[in-house]
Image 1: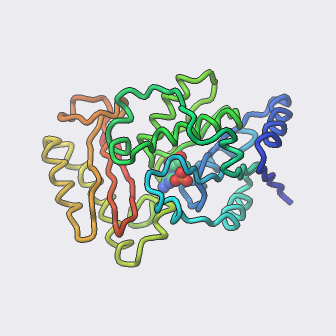
Image 2 (image 1 turned 135 degrees about the vertical axis):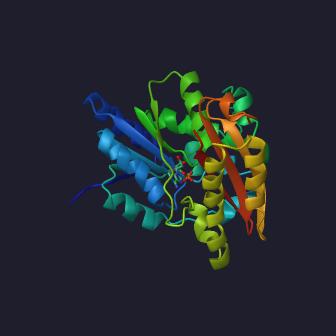
Length: 284
Ligand code: AMP
């Protein structure tokens, strides 16, 4: 029998980890909002391979949702999530309530300086999203005090901002960047994919196909043309493109020339039937 501990209370989780830390155990942390899929599983599995104790949190953070409809419609499958986490051998699950995470209210400023990095893409399209993300990640890091935090490249801008947070916090916690896990047709796995109707689910495959095409074209065409072709590729009935940006992988600023940055990423967000789907691809 493999045991998986489930904590709902901050103090209980903290005192358990304090004891384990004294025994010299390392802690790997995968924060999630639940409705788990193989993308989430890949983070926890990596943590299980690399650390002594793997903890996964499931918390749908209200402060990072600018669209309250998106929050109420966010899929909740806690029973299934726990079964899945148990089946892969997860050591600890943290399932806090909103009051447990925000005992003094939801308006405390996080205090991080992201400079220009939070300005574009998700920062420009989701008002207050990264403030909410920084708030919850800071709180979770203070509670769990992990040695490693496992995050997916799927949320490229988020992952980069968490790296900045770790640099600005008094912590030795290291970020482990995990690759995007995709469906067979290339669609990036997402908790929101289950909300797509049959037709939209099929056309959603065009997002990753467009990114793959951009990667090919970037080798020989000016980025302006690559971006224009990508927008043409995403000009599909029912699609509404929030953005398609080609950015410097480190500064997250849009670039005009492929040679302008050491590493380049194409990031996009498309709304299909009101469902926001994010994806990105490293071009070099
Ligand atoms: P979420 O539950 O959407 O907040 O995601 C929790 C974590 O899982 C984040 O670090 C995401 O980047 C990561 N994640 C979500 N989808 C994928 C995926 N398809 N592949 C890899 N990581 C993912």
